[in-house]
Image 1 (cartoon, rainbow, N blue to C red):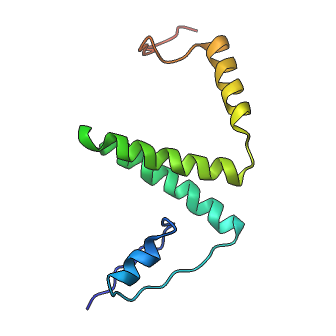
Image 2 (image 1 turned 90 degrees about the vertical axis):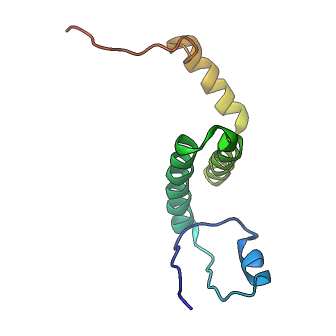
Length: 108
């Protein structure tokens, strides 16, 4: 029987699911610096999965990405209200992404 090495952050119930499947596994609980690093790696993984997802999988992948962002937000103790305020301020000052603009060049 072969062993697949993952060495990455997984959802909290994954060990339970693996155990119910009758498989051997090993997990460890990370300290805060390792957890933060793992979350940031997971953020990239989930963003890539969203980009590559077929249309019928986009909502699932979007929710996975959002869950990772929320975990980072909680770890970094960032208030949701502050995020919304910053988002609105940035949109007012610099605009949003609704006009689908692509900057081609700027002459200095």
